[in-house]
Length: 259
Image 1 (tube, rainbow, N blue to C red):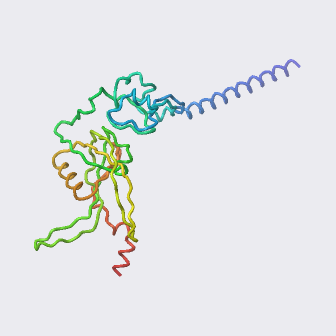
Image 2: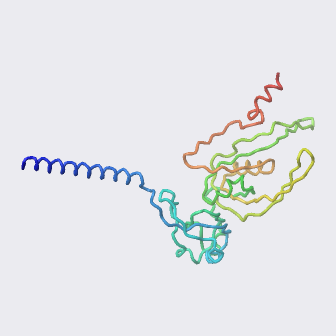
Image 3: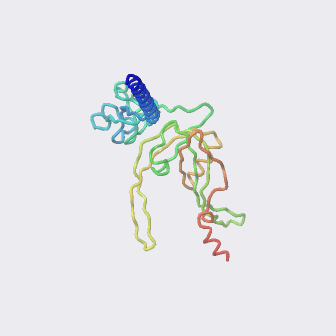
């Protein structure tokens, strides 16, 4: 009888130890799975904060609020309160949903000083919201610039020849050093039936740092076509090629016309 009791007790201890080890293992898996998934408090913009707008005015207008995000989604330098920037103003427009970081603000008037990298020039272009990645381009962003055009070639006899409209990479890697205020511009389109529609398109002036040759290319392309910015990272793969024309997008149409 005593022997059976000892065996039963030993079996119970082994079962308890096994259950404990399984529990610890499961907890370890959950800990690893939820690493970086805990939520942290951060200050975010609820409405657009314009360049030059003070933190006090933004708070009074209800444009700043606290929110919670996953730790993995927390932007480097994001603030949990406005205590450190109470006396400062926005250096560039801040859009709804953006986390607030200290570098977005500075002393009143400091936004008027443009820092141009050594041996570079600063030039500005005006883009619509879609062409500047819907407002996500900010000072310090690296962008690739694409150009679209409908070119004409001037021939020696004084006549001109239209070439195929195109879109192609203009510059693969350029730093944005300034974002100006956004204004509204009217754009009128005409349907095939002759009906005209006018809509208001937001346009923003962006300033980039370039060398002389790049400046010439950007200025020429902006005056003779349309520009679009594409946000890039250090890992983005961007290379120059011949670009794209209607023949590349609709090859079946051109194949049919050739036959």
